[in-house]
Image (tube, rainbow, N blue to C red; front, side, top):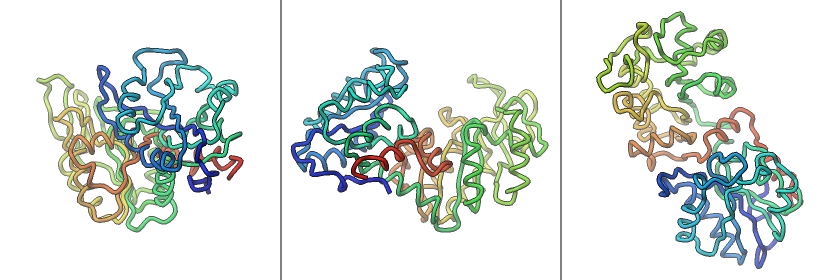
Length: 368
């Protein structure tokens, strides 16, 4: 068990360091989506209502250990002032190389003058960085509401999901999700695989994949997975392919084999319908990774169909953050699922490992 907010000493008059995940998309100084900022509000409000003085900290992007105006948290600070004017926000944690290096000197700087620590940054909890694993060594600590909800929801998928339990995985690389595929193959009733990663599986079945994304060094691994879990793994039976991304590129549907001058960029309409049926009939669904290059409308149909199926499913639906959450929002279905995770990589690592460095650190806090 990780300590909750209620496990903290009385926060009245105390100075609290809140590790939030304000790593939001920003274009030309404007925030594109403030979901992660709003996601921290229940924790912030709980602390403020009990008389705490809250200082928040977060990373933004990858500034490589030195200040970079491109990764300024100023737009976040302005939005936070609108939502919670009493809260202070430190500069981008990654402006200091000590953050990613988990430097004890940087940890000491962060906790100086602070009485309590709260981690509400699930999206960064898989990183053993200074602001994540350092403060619980000395300060009474707790998980914020967002972090606690993520752990409860994703933990439920692993421990006792209602059946049938369906997992839909997409994205570009098998190698990125191999651990997750192995973990979920043992728990899910159906493992639905689309996106760029499906072509390595199709190659393992002996099909030609043309110029599609392919990890040659993973073909044998995929063949082994199919041999072991073949009856649970559902692959596309047709694909939408194109000669390129140019506006005048030829776009065609093929079965599982693709000519050499085409590359698969989406699952085909038959597969989309089949995937949709499996999702809508499930009692529990976890989705991580788009079915194709959904940013281009020519190759968005597969991802849109899965997103719609998630919205229509009467079971418990969880979207694992990242591109899946972006797709869900793009197609207007983000309010129709039960849980949208704020951590893409953290969600996958938690499902694979069952734990994260940030959670382990909280369990070692003085008050745990």
